[in-house]
Image (cartoon, rainbow, N blue to C red):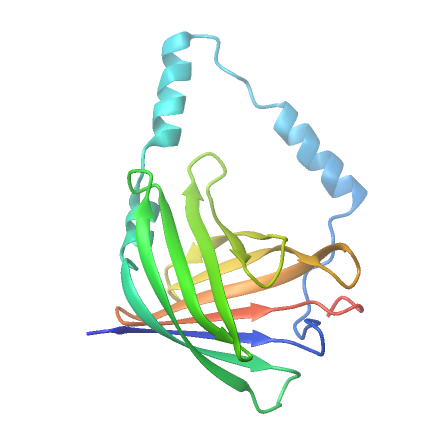
Length: 200
C-alpha cells in the first residue's frame, strides 16, 4: 500500500507568512545560555571521553522512530497565499531511506512546482548531544538552505520545529516554523509556516 504524505505551506505573496513566531531571545537570555555552556565540565579521563563519543554516535529510539518512515510516499501539497484562501494543490512523490548506518533519514522529493520540474531533499536526524531533532532542506528552486531543530511530542505524535531559511527578498535569514503530525502508519501531515516582514 502506498503511503500518503500531505504537506501544506502558508505563503503570503512571495513566501511571506502567517503564523507568529517566538521573539528572538533577549541579550540577558543569550548571556545566560553562554554561561550555562561554559559550566559544562569536559572529562579528562580518556575512557570517559571515548564513552561520550560512543554514546553520541550510537543510534537510539529517536532514530528508530525516523526509520519507520522508510518507503515511497505519495504527496499532496497545498499552498495557501493567505489564511482562508483557496489553496493551490500539487501532487508529488517522496522516497525515504535511512543513511549512515541508520543515523539520518534521507528524503528525496520529486514532482512539479507550479508547472516546473521540482526536486528537493531533506536530511533529518536526532542529535544525541543536543537532545533535539533537526532537518536540513535544499531544492532546485533556490541556492540556500532551510535549517530547523525541534522536539517530538508523544501525546500528539507531532514533531515541532523552528528555524530559519534564506530569504532572497531581504538577502537575510527568515524565521520559520514547521510541524509534522504522524496521523497513522500510512499518513502524515507536514505544515510549514513562513514569517512576514512584521514577524507574523
